[in-house]
Image 1: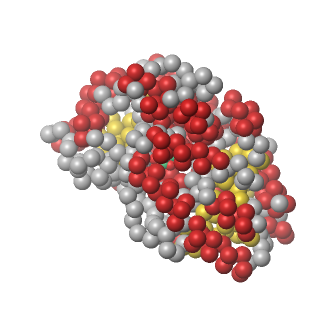
Image 2: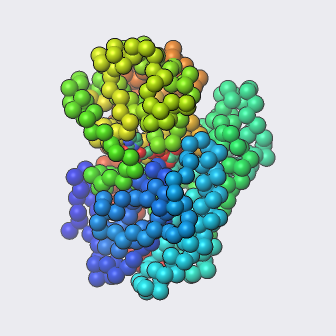
Image 3: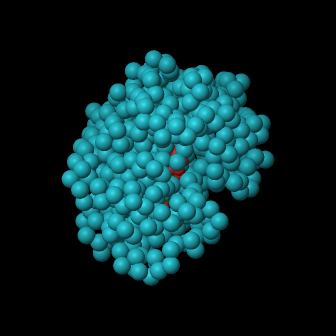
Length: 467
Ligand code: UDX
């Protein structure tokens, strides 16, 4: 008999006779937006009868008490302390450092695991651990990649060499505003691509190439998406990457009560949401990495104030340049605007928030987790992408799926006010809500018996057992 989760997702029951003796080693990339999907995947595969070992850095280590069924193995001698992750330059440095300094220690851990347990079936790594493929090859251990963002983002990353040759990363001011489509990568616009790799285009471009090349020799790729959402892109994907592909997402729908949050979620906002009218609150959050200048923060605050709509706003400590938390808010903002119709937290229980009946819109940076979570709850979006995959994701949200409003001029109070009104009160906003509710229905179907993700998960389990 299959297991049905509280969200209605159906998980095919494991064939314990074979799978319970099989161990999978999972290597998450140590950032919140990557840890969440990898630990969700671990739970999904555990429910299929696999034993799970999580190999992790001490920096941003997952909390083992949240996952009592898994073994955890810290990687010694690499990323032992907190590392700076604000700004794309730091993110690029982190990826280089981990793929360089991390290799020896990771090899040591894998050798130990393999010597202690002959039943290790596969190594599943985040795509950002691209250099680990050489270790897996050396140990003759099948490596499967977990790609944690969308297919369209992947195709944009894989086009980086051509885009570089075409000179798209010059960040010319005309390019930054250009609405022209990028040939072969539609619906991407020149303005998206020129901001794609932000402050170190060459360095980031090289890394993107390594990351994509690192996926080619992998045995298979697991996607946190569902076929019906990205169907148009699939022929391009399979043409360029003939690996086995398993689209089994959205991962978080299988066990929604699981948490792998690195920060403490402030749940006091839930009782505030309980007091609000249905669909009346705008949820505002830009994920775990994006930061803003003080001037942008002020524009956001004024946009929220002038829109006259209620809002729940996540402001991470130190996410406003030069401030500890809320010091830069305009005088009277907390006493008047927030007291009357707002709530501000440092970190929210986002899945619960998006599922709350009072939430009518999500102003997001379009990280893939946030975007998928919004789709799953039928909440239309305002798009403020900051870097990398967020740009192609936002382009799909606004121009292809038509479930969100794009902010074209960054953070500018008049445009913000108008976008909030469009989303929360206009007919256009209602149409977006209808379209995203339709996608939400497709999510529910793909996870049920016979649905695309359900079947793909069955295939994945059989594939791992047979390889
Ligand atoms: C990063 C990249 O920036 C993103 O582009 C990529 O797709 C994944 O890795 P991040 O910026 O943190 O992730 O965004 P996102 O992918 O949306 O992940 C944030 C996660 O944190 C989500 O799962 C969200 O539910 C959670 N979250 C966010 C909270 O639990 N509380 C909050 O207040 C905000």
